[in-house]
Amino acid sequence: MTLPLDILMFAALIVAILIGYPVSFMLAGTAALFAFLGWMTGQFDVGLLGALGQRVFGTLTNDVLIAIPLFVFMGVVLEKSRIAEELLETMGRLFGGLRGGLGVSVVLVGALLAASTGIVGATVVAMGLIALPTMVRNGYDPKLASGVVCTSGTLGQIIPPSTLLIILSDVMSTAYQQAQYEQGKFTIETISVGQVFAAALLPGLTLVAVYIAYLMTRAALKPETAPALVEAGDRPSWQEVQRAVLPPVLLIVAVLGSILGGIATPSEAASVGAIGALLLAGVRSEGNGRLIVLGAAALGAVAVLAGLFPVRLQRSDAGLFEWLIAALTTGLLALGVVAIFISIGKARHRGILTPIVTNTMTVTAMIFATILTASVFSLVFRGLGGDARVEEILHSMPGGPQGALIFVMAMIFVLGFFLDFVEISVIVLPLVAPILILMGHDPLWLSILIAINLQTSFLTPPFGFSLFYLRAAAPKEITTGQIYRGVIPFIILQIVGMGVIWLLPSISTWLPGTIF
Image (cartoon, rainbow, N blue to C red; front, side):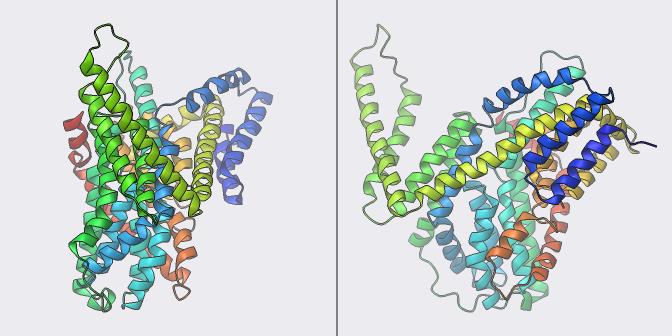
């Protein structure tokens, strides 16, 4: 019996990715090969490929995806400016005196960095270089210490703003619209990035609480695995804690607050975050940072004035008050621009400007290349009848909608052992999400369940990216086996977290329902 081309196509893609070639090349190459085979066998209409240009244009002009490079830039700036290191050191001294306190501080720092950077690699490497050696020196079980660092770093995928949530919101919004069209609705609803961010906030904090509860319980039952810090040093003063914690918190409030409050779109909020991170890096540099602080305050004042007194000087009834407001706003804006250029100059002087720009472009290019080539793959897969086959499989699952969802979640979990979250998001989810929504599952709740599942893909061997990041940054006495064994309890905790969200959907639906 010959396997249908759609099944062979998906199997060929998995094999090709496991060989190790860049995913975007494998996606486009597999799609081209099976489009040709389908055309030769009469199973594929090559006229469908005429839609590729429109798909590419739609992706590159997508208002949601435009926010990705700006959020990546924000995270890279915070990584290079050593803000993360100071935060780790201060929080470690603050909680280190408690049994299990150093592990708790790592989790809390991971949550703060997640909400301000959203870059898993940067967070894991920073904590692997700073926190992991300290934990091992003070008697922590190397497996527990490795698991805490790996898992805390992945919080950047579920706590907004994160690249995963931006991609997921775009995919799920399209799936939601497609499901409504198939139901015969032409006045359709959409899902915004703000709604997904709001839906992910409480589940992300729930995971933080689960990790901390596990650490405290582990420290109480087995004190030798998570002892109090014997070299804690001086407890940090309130001023030191404020200096370390306040900048990331202000950035989080500026970015998330503007999105959830409906003040700014995701791309506008990402711009605020990018400029804010650049100004923070400038203030942390050597030299007088007062002018940068004044410039940041001036930009904040411009935002407030623009909201309270929108000036339209081209109107015929513009009077003296409008002209005064315009002059004040212009002066404040000029001061802000000066502060930005000073921060850029300081970054260049420290030699971090080129790495910041290079890393931002590299990560952005990787993400968009995967999204664009996945669109080609999806088009050919659908042309070969793959979407109908997926729908048939899900409808045949025992247990109805719940059984179909369990099957999809299990499939995503298994694929996470081998594939990256971007690949799963843009290849698999467009095929299964519309069907699950048609079965009656709430799209926001479904988005968060899938997000936590995809977060787990960073921890699952053999290709969990957090494991690779930590292996590169960990001391030589930490073995790869210890890292792999250390994440197993936290993978179980991830599954527990998914179970909590499954049984209590209001954790993910209450906040977006209240705000929006």
